[in-house]
Length: 88
Image 1: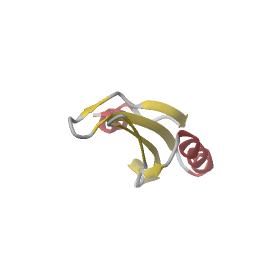
Image 2 (image 1 turned 90 degrees about the horizontal axis):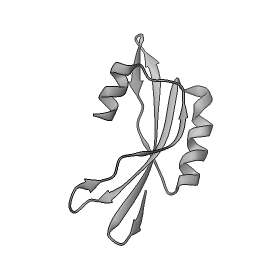
Image 3 (image 1 turned 90 degrees about the vertical axis):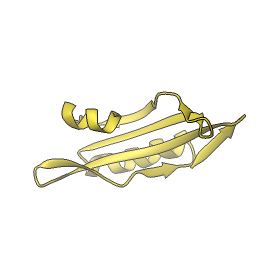
């Protein structure tokens, strides 16, 4: 979901990871309507996932300029090689 402020959009996302075939697999991202909803969803998923992240990202989709993601919640730790893929 998106919050709009003067042309800038803020997206709230929960991204979780599962283990499959001995490796980390990115689950389908979940969009949230607000920071509070993203936090609630992430906390609900955390006990069942190896890694759960919730973050927001603001920017202008028309220009393609976005700020760095802001971490709202983190549970678990991604191996560095997986984290580099996610952050790229």
